[in-house]
Picture 1: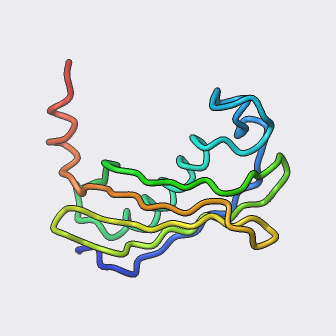
Picture 2: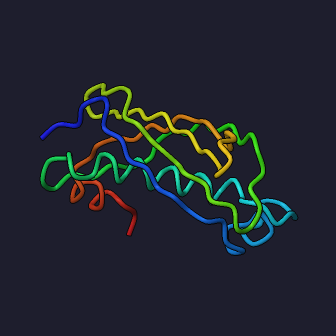
Length: 127
């Protein structure tokens, strides 16, 4: 099985206190922190491509571009959608968009992942 452009995944979250910039250390305001937003976007890319990778393969993040455009307070629902837009060998490129419950664009970005052999990847880690 080989991933092909057009694979998509979407995740719906409600901003919780542990997701805020205050809690994750990326600021001092009680709104969705950029690191948590990025984690949700990466999770969507993993969800989109994971079932389409060959047995024994996984994907790892290699590059991220993120434009965090709007603040999302605690209790706000945010939908993060990721779509595989390009496949270049083992390189997988996703575009993502996060929209709040009012349709406001919270963030846009691009995430590159690399399809790797899981065992070989883990074997190369420092002891």
